[in-house]
Image (cartoon, rainbow, N blue to C red; front, side, top):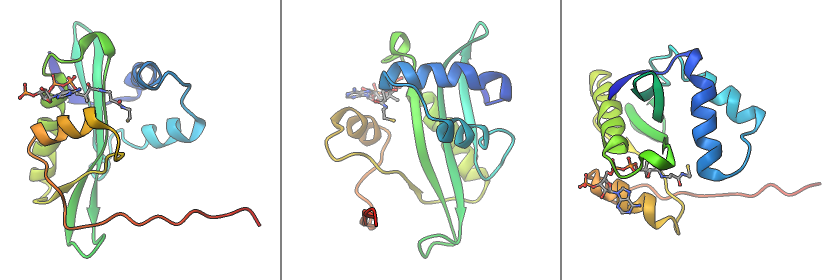
Length: 144
Ligand SMILES: CC(C)(COP(=O)(O)OP(=O)(O)OC[C@H]1O[C@@H](n2cnc3c(N)ncnc32)[C@H](O)[C@@H]1OP(=O)(O)O)[C@@H](O)C(=O)NCCC(=O)NCCS
């Protein structure tokens, strides 16, 4: 298995994996967001590949000056093709992203998980994540 930066040629495979995980088509906004993670050191995107086939992806953000921190790393999304789950690919991708963050001077890495997503919580806990000092706030805008 090879870990490498995501390229424009990988986008279709990444979209396919995401659609298989969520069982729903990705939106145009999602495609645009994904494309921003190519060749952008502040928006890293990494794929895991085996014999030319993309098996998983991860992307994040190096946030400068956000939330009172000088610099922080955000793990935004990770996904592994269903037939390749449980084989260490998610861990390898996360560790590669953490190396990228470290090289950028990041010390604190943050992520956010749906409160009822036990699988993702277990994965992040296994990677060494713990509760952060931040709390998420939400405001839902209503139609006028
Ligand atoms: C979560 C996910 C990224 C993990 O990747 P993976 O390649 O399957 O996980 P790994 O094999 O690298 O496992 C890494 C560690 O996390 C743990 N882990 C992974 N998935 C787990 C799960 N579902 N439940 C409990 N622990 C889990 C493993 O036990 C492993 O621990 P170890 O290294 O000490 O053995 C992957 O399963 C996935 O894409 N899931 C779907 C994500 C999803 O639902 N996305 C929708 C919202 S974005």
